[in-house]
Length: 253
Image 1 (tube, rainbow, N blue to C red):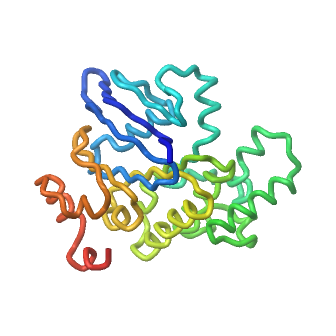
Image 2: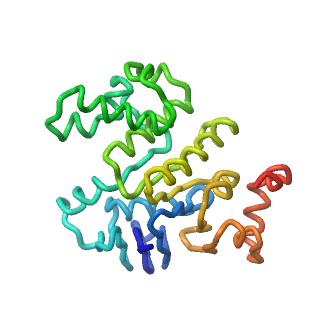
């Protein structure tokens, strides 16, 4: 299938403090790969390296076969055009309407007619199960789940090959969280995009993942399919699952 992301022995120190240590994994084309860990485990630190915000202290990061580690700023900017990023709280612009948020890249970087941009916006909103009636609404007029879906529509507006979701179910009720889970899988199936999902939501992780990475204090504990992770004999993983999933939740997976 081909590796969209390849990370080898990624180690990061900041002011003498170890953030990541010898993190090694890859993400296949079309895969939903989930990075799971508690707060401060280094999940978001990995994604900062993938998009070129941070440089490794040691090791390397390849995205689309290109070594991000040695890229210039201009090269990284070009790379990011092919990466969609869904921020934890959505990060929508409060003063802009839904269509302006979703079409923001085209408004800022492309010389396109407004109606042409709106056509793209309608297509992307449809993919996240939102209709034209939300186009002129402000983020404050949307529910939490709708804001998250608008954020996803903005992330896919440029047809990226890779989408990074940062805690996509954070702050949502259980029912809405499962709707977002279904949407992530649906988008992968419809568009063929590769997805990296950063989360501490164990129910979500086991529901959507092709493979999962368990992270603890900046170190990889285990990588495997949901089934392999569920059957793990590693004490930390077993304890993490036990704390993250109740018996009722386990039966629904």
